[in-house]
Amino acid sequence: MDFKLIQRLALLMQQVELTELELDDPKSGARLRLERGPKVQPGATPVVHLSHLGAPAPMAAPAAVAAAPAPSAAPAPAAAPEGKPIQSPMVGTFYRSPSPEAEPFVQRGTSVKPDTVICIIEAMKVLNEIRAETSGVIVDVLVENGQPVEFGQPLFLIRPS
Image (cartoon, rainbow, N blue to C red; front, side):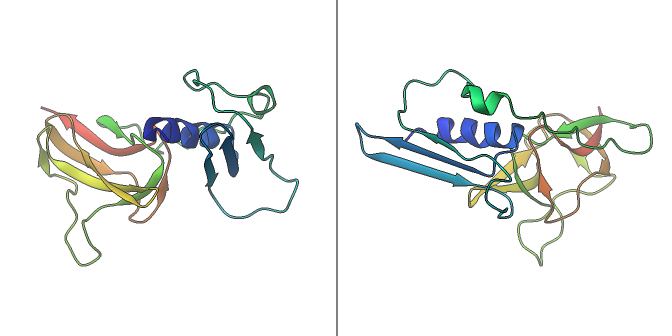
């Protein structure tokens, strides 16, 4: 199964607040089941079962899923931001350091270059190094270590140089 398809499905699940998604392809026999978040009581959240895997359109959703309510926006920082946000490129768990005993990759006042690793986001049991992608100085860290993050959520504020 295509990894990019799995990533798009995980993002779609987050956007329409699904907790489970199951796909079966009778031709190839491939089967995929995705679950996220805490278990809920039956009937509280819709479960979508698709019997055929065709060539998916980008972020296409079945009609029943498209009617789900839009997720609420993440809260903005209380004070006016003093820099440009560095956003999460994926859904996962945010880690400031490579291990619990290690120092954080960056903190307030750290100068970074585009290739500087600033954090790790664990998604689907894979540790993904996130890079600054711009030069500047870290102004603020907006996420606590071990906190779940969403796609597009601001992680850091940076003052570009």
